[in-house]
Image (cartoon, rainbow, N blue to C red):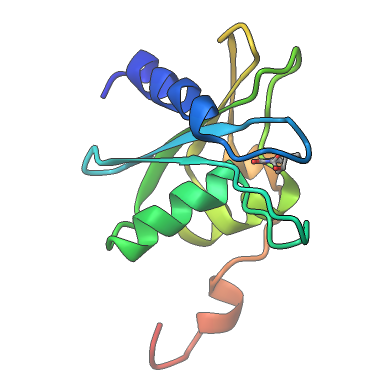
Length: 136
Ligand code: THU
């Protein structure tokens, strides 16, 4: 998938977002090393805290289908500013692919891309816990 196609896949997910409370749709498209792409949208909940961000929806789809080797993710809202992943989503992405690229889009489809390591400097990752452990 080209970069433009990945961005288009994220934008297409805006229409799937379930956002009755915030009215703030987010779409994501997560690309893996083998080229497989998993999309996601935010899914809100009346109890608020169970709300899933678009990025974590895509990660759950990918990991549950056996994919963890993420290369890049495109994230978009319909907002004026670039839609970057929240801190929780940065952490979840970092777990699997600290060197991936994050492509954030604004409502006009313009992009601002940054390495995840710049969005989450000195991140806490699996190495802290898996060092010298059997199931590493
Ligand atoms: N949201 C995402 O989907 N991804 C982010 O990284 C930021 C926030 C969603 C959660 C909620 O449904 C709405 O945006 C407003 O916070």
